[in-house]
Length: 120
Image 1 (cartoon, one colour):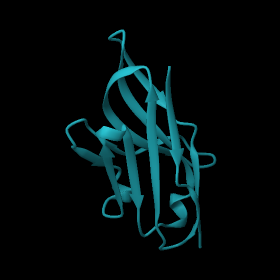
Image 2 (cartoon, helix red, strand yellow; image 1 turned 90 degrees about the vertical axis):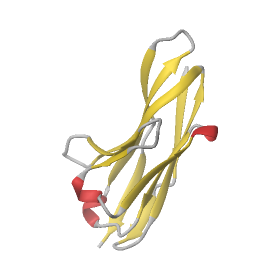
Image 3 (tube, rainbow, N blue to C red; image 1 turned 45 degrees about the horizontal axis):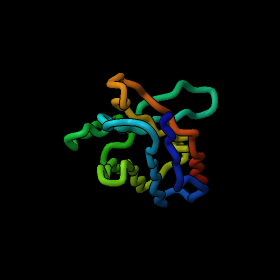
Image 4 (cartoon, rainbow, N blue to C red; image 1 turned 30 degrees about the horizontal axis):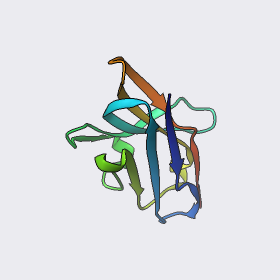
């Protein structure tokens, strides 16, 4: 069983910053890609940023230049530094990881979600 524990969400004013963290634990051999998704009320979940096992990153256009994804492989943790936040960034943010389980099977896991609210 794999668990992803997220932290760092909250309420911030426009222009402020937050840092999300997601730590993976459980019965797995390795972690491949890690990413952050978000879902705003009435909208579909969208990929915000992802980072490969080698450190390559991708971002949705709306956050480029403002958000930075990083990972600490020793801690099985992925981070999302969010700067210059806007009200349209308000959403529940979910961590997602691609894992190799101990039985050799590929799997994907989701965190429980953390609320980010940006006030205008």
